[in-house]
Image 1 (cartoon, rainbow, N blue to C red):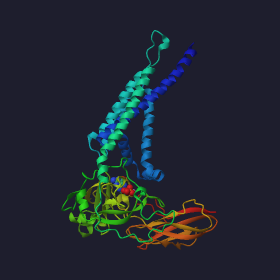
Image 2 (image 1 turned 135 degrees about the vertical axis):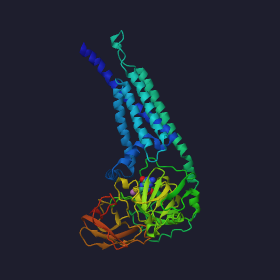
Image 3 (image 1 turned 30 degrees about the horizontal axis):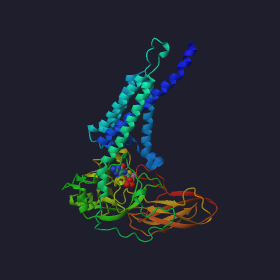
Image 4 (image 1 turned 120 degrees about the horizontal axis):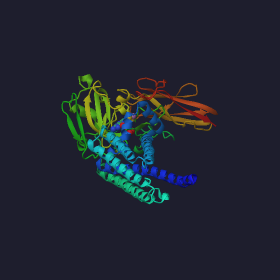
Length: 529
Ligand SMILES: Nc1nc2c(c(=O)[nH]1)N[C@H]1C(S)=C(S)[C@@H](COP(=O)(O)O)O[C@H]1N2
Ligand SMILES: [Mo]
């Protein structure tokens, strides 16, 4: 008799357990959908997943950030967000399972997650204040109420006069769950639509923009700067292929018409605030500059060359009365601040030494893409991106290296980081299986603002052979190189090294990317058939 009853109740308990888990997941979905809708109304960056993700990025140690970039590349942010969603799902399932028994506690648990999101959102560096807590709070309440309601349907009804009637309200649960799912999907979709509408002005402003012709055009790229060897990166990197490295989980879509740049700080005699039109009215220059990321491993992909159009920074700073330290200036560090709270510090001396430091507005003939910093970003030849290339810039502050550590420096990266002389084999690819006979070994080498003077290639432990260098566009751009090789059967290691115009040979010493960029020679192993 007792066994019999167990048999009758067990399958029912499994369904109830599954329904509990489902109610947790539904509460999670409702919370996220509500938060999505609210954040579209408040600020896209204020959503809980973005806020918690951003907080996680800020707290990631340099070594781990590097590991993420190495393993997930530009997908690192997607992986992070999927990770957050996976953790949320686990907790949602757990809360849902305990909810029928501990209804209040489980509902409070959902609220707690909302609170975590709210705290993360208001403590972001780019926070708009307490209103940023709204999406998380609204989401937490929606999820908490829903879990409470669904758990109510799952509660065992006290055994009535008929003992077999004890059970839970299946019909009520299914109806409530379905209604919740539909409402969540609706809220999510509405959030998406509203978010799109909010950025419409910024997108329209960018689409309507026609960049003025530069007063100083870039010299024509010499014929022969591109060797046209299959597999070698093109001399100019198309915008769509240009690497992207930043901490922004949501790409800022800045409206250029209301954008302002403030220049102020130590030694700034005449502080200014400039509009986008103010910048466009100035004399623009156009320059080819190769940009490199400090997180680029030897042989890695985070390097690209674009034809930038922008306002020369030296002249602008000089007009504000700024002098470099070598001429008695008080400030030795220029802090660029972005709309998303990034801070990037460059040496004032380098920025004002006559190199083409730019407030860039154009990239390869187009307004900057949103991903690459629209409406304005900095570009300084010869410095790694994290100490020079602030995207979505909104403020320039002159200060000292002693007084202020910008974002990456606080996370273990070097205060100053000129690019290291580097070279990369683009073809053949690692583990390629070329045929015996002539195989073209080719790639790129860079030493921005010093220039590349020589590239040498070594096969196995053989002598260094001088590669043919493509024509130089400028010393701020990379150079292609090639060497025909009479490939013989078997496994071979191909190694490359460059020499810059100061005469310095690229060092063999392998270092990690932290704190000031990877060094060492790039080699590729191939098997010749
Ligand atoms: N606002 C902002 N600007 C930024 C960053 C960032 O995270 N946020 N990353 C910097 C780094 S580390 C590099 S290498 C360059 C990359 O520029 P790109 O994404 O246009 O290639 O942007 C720099 N500017
Ligand atoms: Mo970078």
